[in-house]
Amino acid sequence: MASWKDLRRYLKNDGWTFVRSGVDDIYTKTLPNGDILRSRCSKGTGEISPALFSRILKQQLRTDKETFNSKI
Image 1 (cartoon, helix red, strand yellow):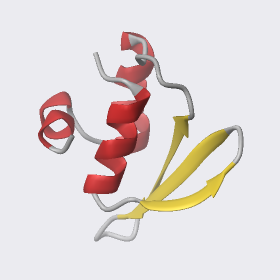
Image 2 (tube, helix red, strand yellow):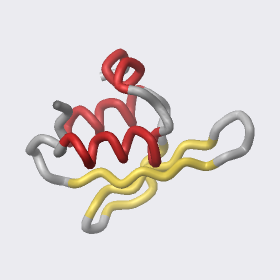
Image 3 (cartoon, helix red, strand yellow):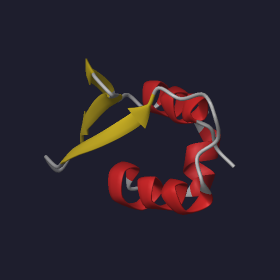
Image 4 (cartoon, one colour):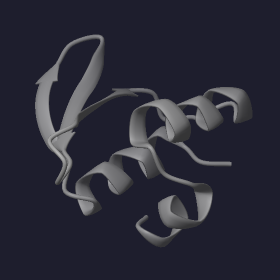
């Protein structure tokens, strides 16, 4: 399963822009159609639970595991 470090690496490699740091780090990405995606990344170092990782892929990143794994 993916870790928070893997998620940060994906966001950097996929062209996401760091917005701010607070409880979590916030990143955004503007898609070619004008949609703006927003992702929160915990500052933790552990693994992301399978249920949460699935939600992050679908709701925040709008991608699948294969694409995610290819960019980390």
